[in-house]
Amino acid sequence: MKLSRVLCAAIVLAFAGSVARAAQPPKTHVMIVGVAHFVARRDIYNSTYADSPLSAKRQAQIAEVVDRLAHFHPTKVLIEEPFGNAIYQAQYLRYLTGNFTLPADEAYQFGFKLAKRSGDRAIYPIDTWGPSIYDDNSAAGKRIDTYLKAHFTDVRDSEASADIARDREIQLHGTYLDELRYLNTSQSIRANASWYSVFDGMGRGASDAGSIYVAQWYTRNCFIFSNLLSVIRPGDRVVVLMGQGHEFLLRQFVRLNPNLVNVDPLRYLK
Image (cartoon, rainbow, N blue to C red; front, side, top):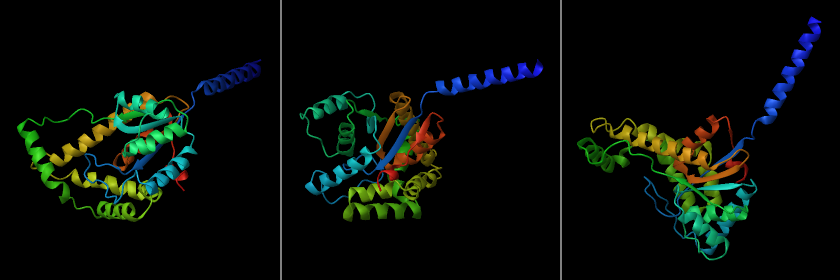
């Protein structure tokens, strides 16, 4: 009888475990695609393309990138535009009906086109600056801003400098696909992120300006990731198109989240 009760209990536990596993929602697959900005933004370094993304040559290259990313079969496309701003959804719906001409920005050229190709009726802007962690108007804030404006180019980082030089060479002489293949390598992502590690130790005599700047950058990406989490659902297949500088932190967040699966875009950019 004792053995029978043990076997019965084991069967009940095994059944309960299988039910619990079956009840778990499917994980969300997230592909963070680091890009260079087609149009200058408030970045430390901006692109140096010699031609327009609206040229016939570049439009063909954009179509090739979109075609490759579409093989991931995304259900949602997230772009680097202000979170909660309804103008992007309105523009996207007009684009779907042929009543909106896409500007040169990569959020439109890659993001809108990929979302349309995927059959989605929505576009998802997730960018934010996040809350400011220091007061620009305070004495310390003014010291920080003065230091930041004067010393961005003083960073001694051979790894980041080599990465920037290589990327600019591709921008001038390669295709958009060539560039995305490079920007999404672990080597380039790490080189970009290394700049922040070096800058963090600078400006200690100016109210820790370097640390403040890097902390603000990390804060921004924390809030961007929160926006990402707010628009995705279990089972989604998500493409996130962001400036490459965001890629290191956002990929770390995706990898650490047990409800998400990190997808390497290089699988689709081959």
